[in-house]
Every structure is written in structure tokens, then in C-alpha cells.
Image (tube, rainbow, N blue to C red; front, side):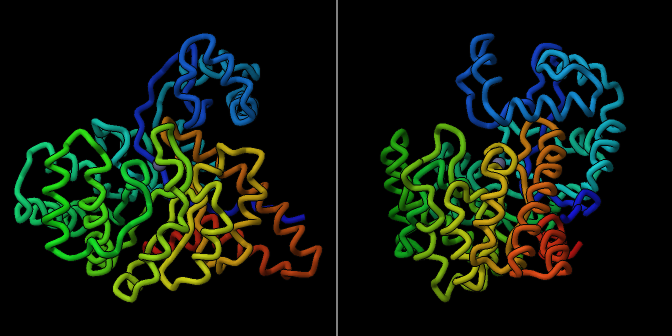
Length: 374
Ligand SMILES: [Zn+2]
């Protein structure tokens, strides 16, 4: 049996958060789903979800308290020096760096404060939807729109320290991108349509497709990766249009082949994503959100990702969004699951012992380290 507990970890997908002491309910016990389960009754429903049960026990053991949500909340609220606590927590799992999508929450978390409280290497990711919303709200003309859109993205990468770009078009008009919207005339018509019906999301689809294609080219020119949300998410996801397979038509085109695209989450469409990472020269897959929140699927997520994808194209992530414990919990879960998965592959004679260690190390941090030159 492999033991990966001491391997270093880079979390490929997280969000900024500020620690909010709440002696009644500690939010990292909650997954991203179940937002409508607010109040005492809602918490009771949440507590029957597998992730919540498991997270409560793991955190209780770490904090030295009773394994109940109330006891964990109290113990966490009493921690004191937040930065020292996070440093200890991350050191215990070898967590070395976080990629941080600053587009959620809105309004944005103050990054200087976040960095003070989370003393690890922070790699910010620039999301394109907040500037799109600003430019649509201001009803600027097309030439101004794309000039400011392009300049904002370029500045983020060249001057503001962002290391990658992100889109959540799957929450807006879906992943079925029309490659025919790439030209400037198409973009101009798309903006007119979006401005004609500002309250109907579907009217902005041609414009959003145009801007996604534009971003693919900008990322290629700037030499940074483009993170695209795929798979399920919060309840406002366009559920019928979030399968990463819908991106295949666009990503296989020669003009986008030199852009490094990271399919974020992929869950539950891991098989399609694994094939895309194998079939296309420009695709990586990130396993966040499924890990850790789809707790019972963890082994299956790693196994399915490994169906076809080159092991150099698979990235560990968690989608931590309310606290450092999501990354810690995800790292523990991933290390144990990978040990079981690699052991099964080794027992069947599919990999050697050395390969098992190399593959786990690559998924947990090596592939992200190579991508960002860390
Ligand atoms: Zn996320």
C-alpha cells in the first residue's frame, strides 16, 4: 500500500475568504451545494450529507474537540492567531501554494488582508466576467468595450501579478461556444444584441462566445493558461450546457491549439474530460469540487481521470471557498484516495511502484509547479 501523506500539495483552484468566527456554525463544514438549507432546519439537513459528516469528524480530531458541528465551530472560533493556525494547518499536509480565483466572492475580498491571514504562496487568477458586467452596465460602444476588455486582461497578467485567466461562462450562457463569433463584426453585432435586451441572459450569448474566443487568443499571446469552469456548481449553473465535451468543437481548432486550457472541476463529466486531455494538445483537467465535496466519488474521480488523460495533464484542486480547511481536507482525502487507486493499479500490474509515486506527486503538485514555473 502506498503512503502519500508526506507529498507536497498545490491547490489548483480556490477562492479568497476571510475568516468569519461563528461559534454556531463553521462554514468549511459545508459544501458548495445546499445554499438554500439556511437556518436551523437547513443545518440539520446539511449535517446528513456525507461531506459534512466526514469534515466534522476530521476537523474535530485536528482541533481536539467533540465531533459535532457545534463543538467544531466553537473550537475554531477560539483559535486565536489566524495566520499561525493556517501555517500549521498547511504545514501538516505539505500545502505549498494556492491558485486563487478572485472573481468569487463579489464584492472582492481584500487580497492584502487575505495574504496576511493565509501565509502560503498565492497565485491569483483573473476572472473575465466582472469586467464584462461593468462594461455592459456602462453600455459602452464596441470599440471601447474590447479595448478596455483586452487592456484589463493584459494589465492583470503583465502588471498585477495574475498567473492565469478564468471564465464562468457555464453560469451565464453555457459551454456550447459558437466558433463563428470570433470576428470583430460578429462581436459588434453581439454587443448590440446584448444591449438591446440587457435583462435576458440568452441575448448576451453571441457576445460572451466572442469574448471567450478572444480570451483564448489573448491567453495564447500572453503565454498563460485559461481556466474554464465545467461541470456542476451552484444552483445557477446552466446544467444542460456545462459538460466540457461542449468545448471540444472550439478547442480542437488550429487557432486555439496553442492556448493551454484547464477544464476546472469537470465533475461529473470526468470521462469526457479525460478523453479531451488525451485527444487535444492543449487541455489539462482539474479535479476540484468533486474533490472533496463529492466525498464518496473520490476514488472514482481519480480513476476516471486516469482512464485516458496523460498523467502530466491532471491537477489536484479543491474549490476552497470559505476557509483554509477545504484545502486541508481535500489534500488529506486526495492523498488517501490516490494511495488506494495506485495500489489497485499496481496490484493489477498496470503501473510499477515507482510510477505510482511519480503519478501521485505529479497530480498533487508537480503538474501545477511545471505549468507555473514554480
Ligand atoms: Zn471555484
